[in-house]
Image (cartoon, rainbow, N blue to C red; front, side, top):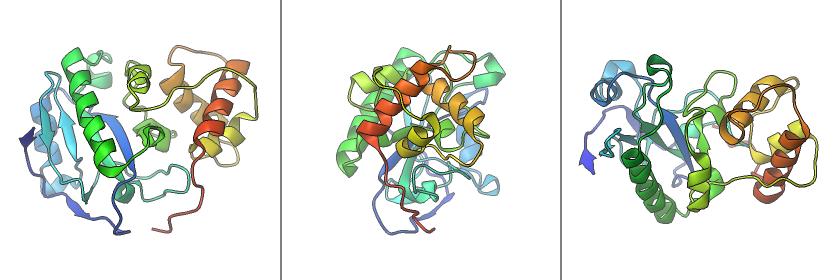
Length: 227
């Protein structure tokens, strides 16, 4: 663990410990460029951790403070995601480098970091989410090549089973996705990005069965957090 302090943080607005983790990719050319950007006061962005491609872990903000990584969006009833979450940035060029895979040293470092975070704060695996999950109309990270199933097999996230089918949008909302009156397209895209990254075409029975299982096992609190 390398301390690399950023000035870009505030106190958590609710005065409570974090209860979520949000995973991002950086979409920048190098890890050094990421650290420079997240530590520059004028940029007003940060994360708690950055993990380099070689597995080096940098801590920018203390876990009890509110880093500025999530932006607009919500998960379940949580609107101020920054106040509720720990943000982890994975150094990865994303669209700048044709969406490279996440190297083994980086994934192994993430697993170790996540295990510690979940244990320290009693965070449940279902509360480890993608940036694209909480902001499906504007974000797509960490992207299709991120191995969510690997995290789930290690007890660090969740993975759906295929069984009975339900109402996709109702179940997506119960699982946590921000669902409005006509949000099928972005919510379906965010769901597939994480759980069916190579699926195409309209909503199908597998989508409906998978989200129904997730909603039944991991329904979130939909009470607004009133930031």
